[in-house]
Length: 350
Image (tube, rainbow, N blue to C red; front, side, top):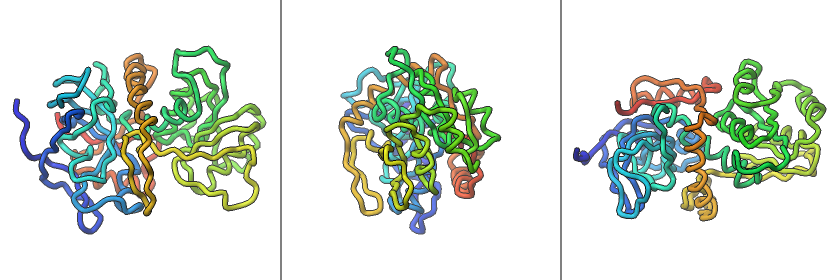
């Protein structure tokens, strides 16, 4: 079956909106695969690249998380063949030939993971992806946790601030699979969900005594992942550490007030560093990190195994109707704060 020359894709318009346009199907490099997209999942970064950060330019294809079938492979591709089911993420909304809200996508073969039989494309796209890889790199690359099933080191207690976020839900599963005691915060209506994912205890982040309650119940926390990294959440997460440790954040955080825990190191992680390219945001160039890319490529083999074994499950999924034409509706839902503990997914091809 021959591949067409053009496709439908969600692109950035001159007025910083999005629209479905007909564009050329991307060419692939020797180390890349061409994937027919079956499903794509949404992240806040998709719309923030366009309207909040000013990274996108007119014509850029939007979207990061994807799942689909390989239809073409470059000459340097190893262990991946035409017909394979794969998933992952790309740094969308930055180029005119790279994004997951499209009928076809190019991706580096070793940054895609193999989707096992029994896992739907919708589930694979929801796992993706930005959120799961952020959580994995946070725990294993930066916090030094052992991969699931690889070590008998003493258990650690870790705090996941805002566990109902996409990153938070995957972080809970990874930390639990690695033998950690997981403490999470979230809205009361999401507490049971987070417990089913592996959280030992979930605290209401809006409680005025949440920090004291966490420290009283768990006086041995030395690591935290703040999945919000805004509106004072990092200061609260840092205050929960009862010994010197590290709080990982996903957005820039400045200690601009008094009362910060002096024993808490604040470190930022941006998952795009795993894609091997430098990128600009707000006039600041974030360099490529080859070590992070190499680590991510190795991790994704492990991630595929966790999905196959059932240890890693997708976030609860909400399919937005309309395929690519539904992306605009999904953006509005997320901007309005109407997405909670769910992953928005678009079905692109049958």
